[in-house]
Image 1 (cartoon, rainbow, N blue to C red):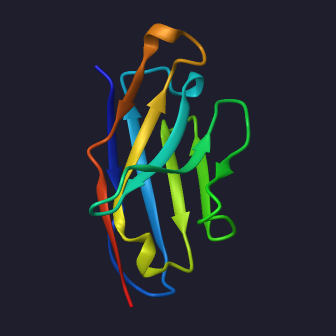
Image 2 (spheres, one colour; image 1 turned 90 degrees about the horizontal axis):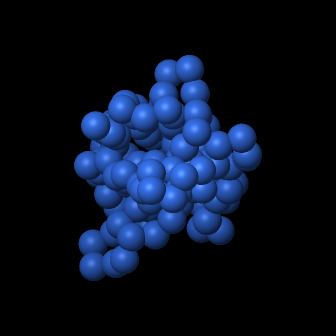
Length: 120
């Protein structure tokens, strides 16, 4: 059974930093593409950053230069370091694991989400 468990969200002031973590279990982590998404109230879920297996991270334009995604395959964990936070970064952040680039039937999985709130 695949599980993704996020942590590290919270309330931070404008310009502050947070580090999100996502621990995966029940899968061969190094073979899965990992990503962070976010969903603000009343908006659609949007992609924040991806870190495909064996590749480098990619970022949405809105977070480039401020957010850094990393992965530790030995610890089955991905991180999202968020600096220079803005009120528009306020959202629930979700961890995503997608195995379909390797085997189509592996599918994708989501964490439960962690709330990030940036006050102005």
